[in-house]
Length: 448
Ligand SMILES: Cc1ncc(COP(=O)(O)O)c(C=O)c1O
Image (cartoon, helix red, strand yellow):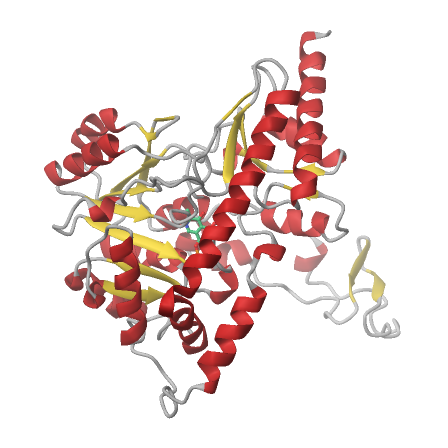
């Protein structure tokens, strides 16, 4: 400082500098030095001091730019991508979407109805309630609000319940946009330790007594990022602790339908009916996140409050997406697709696990998920996740470092792999390369 942007003095030769052709960068000589500036911007313009102008709220937001970095790298199509949080584009059921869209838009039932109620179309709420009942969650349409994605539900819960300084308990490694949302609201976020079966419910009683959380945010089924699933007895313990300490549970079930086997634990929302559990899910993982459609199941009193808060930013979920989702749910059209998808995912996960068993160096451990997208890998002692990522990228493979999901942002011992995202033929190659990279780093470490 001061940089050329804040240099109030006019450039010496500004008047005589011919304008550059549009799109070209003009080199403009200032009193102190030369600076390349965009040909369209005024050479002596003072840009807004963004960091002062942005609110404290937005400045509290920590932005992980991995997603855009990944996109840039993937653009050449050579990277084997275990980093994404989305399905492989080839898994989006385009034919099904085409068929149900045609049906949805050739019907006249919504003619003359340009908008939807803020809570969503009544029929979609009814269909979602019916869908939830098949998952063991006994609710009615009035318990359901259609959302513009599950993330909107997290944000609305934050607005509805969190005062600055309130405590939120979360799994120590969790969905990072949720952490950002809690942080932005000034919440005190406390991570509860996890093991292979998710959040340590045996510790919850003590955490609740000590921190008096407003809510516990949990992804109990096929968790992001660890892939873990909480068994029923833990779920019961979690609910008991929440009831005893009068705090809410936000259950994020984004992956719950993608089970590899026949058995799937009942959601927390199906084990409790006094209103302590607010349940969230989405079409993003089973169909496509492009629909931007999710839903929340909660006490009607809470639905009313969330709808009132939502009115400030979003009138309702896109009517086009709602009509497509209705058509997907009618006559169980989506069920067959989800069954086929989960079976394909189980095969990809088996391929990934077999590759780890074959190629992983001593000291490397991995979770074996029962559904969803993610395998959580513990690196051998002394190998750092960021080093493993840099070295793996150099050989054309990418994944997420564990620190992104860590409440304290210090975890450098884990990596997350979305094992269902790469093309099936690339999974073994990708994991072989990661294992070779880690083996190389380990050798550097030990000097052997
Ligand atoms: C746990 C979890 N919740 C919510 C979402 C996002 O859901 P949506 O696209 O419906 O906002 C994701 C996506 O990565 C997720 O992993």
